Length: 131
Image (cartoon, rainbow, N blue to C red; front, side, top):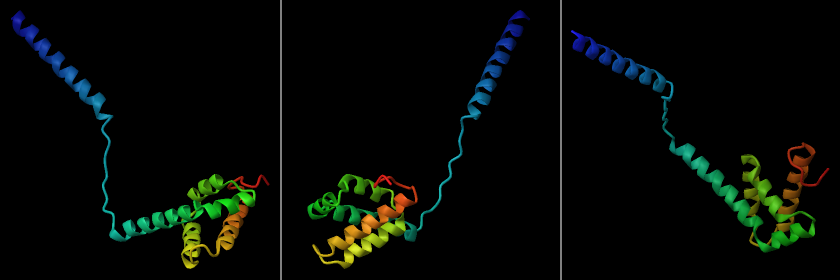
């Protein structure tokens, strides 16, 4: 009789321990949701990244960096600002770059960049010109 009672208590303890472990670990289970990504969304994302890369490549050219330095703006600061520009600003700037033949229109491009930086400074979004 004692053997059965001891076995029964051991079984209850095992079941209790298992239930406690299950209750504790059930709080750590997270749900995962998956969604389909449409081809159009993927293409739009790719075009946005391509426009951003286009602008960064144009700003990394030596002539552009020399002009930025001549105007008193650090080229690295402009490259950092490109990363924080909105998608519409990037696409507009990329469109301007693509319209101009290579080597021409750099002054207009720099002017546009400086105007965008000035506007974002006035709106207190950046601090390029220390206004």
